[in-house]
Length: 343
Image (cartoon, rainbow, N blue to C red; front, side):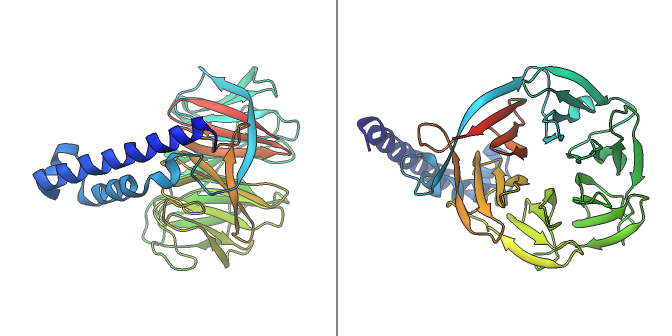
């Protein structure tokens, strides 16, 4: 460590100790119920905060984190034209599609970040959350507020729609992400509220459905975003179960990746996921502000770092896309897209 890293590490330790001490004093003076009332929290949220505060030094200082750094430098930022974007996708030409859900549209940019056009808008999409673009240029949007998938044919501004089936207990679907299969014959959707993954044909017929609320294999608790690898395996981020669940193309269980925690290789609030053609699985954690990398078997490889060899910090990272050596990351609260280049 150089002098700067040493002083940073010492400051982080003292800062963490001070936070712990103050929080413990408040807890002793006010009690659990009193502190919950002061902070407008329910008890289980308070427990999460206490755990995060107590163990946070593991992720506070990049100089102290033992995780391998996978180095990226920032080459582009797109900001000022979106409000709370949630996801991003790339087409075969490298054009960038950013889902701007508050405006109910998809904003399309060229490779240099210049605005080209938009898809959707009021009356066409309603609170969309997830997006995918296939190799023929079709754009798939999880049209959450309308309980359906919207598919924009290549070069067209008017989509066709596929309504998602109601759950077995007759609740409407809540799609938060969607994806094409590698051969474009199946459309996958994450049904967040009904804790399941749905696979449809291009005509909207059910191919399979997996999941209900639970923690076991082929069970989910609020799945959020997904990606498909080149072999057709389905990778699903579970926000509350704090893991990635991998399904085979027919929906059968393959493996879990990660678990709850704040150590490298663990998740606190995972949100976005993308799988590269090299077999690297990138997972964003919106609370910890990091992007971690695994191989397809679930082995932890490292954390996205910067050109200085430190862990790269993000602000509410969400959906991601990857193309060759470029990684695109949506930061929701700053309302921007970052484009990173691998060193």
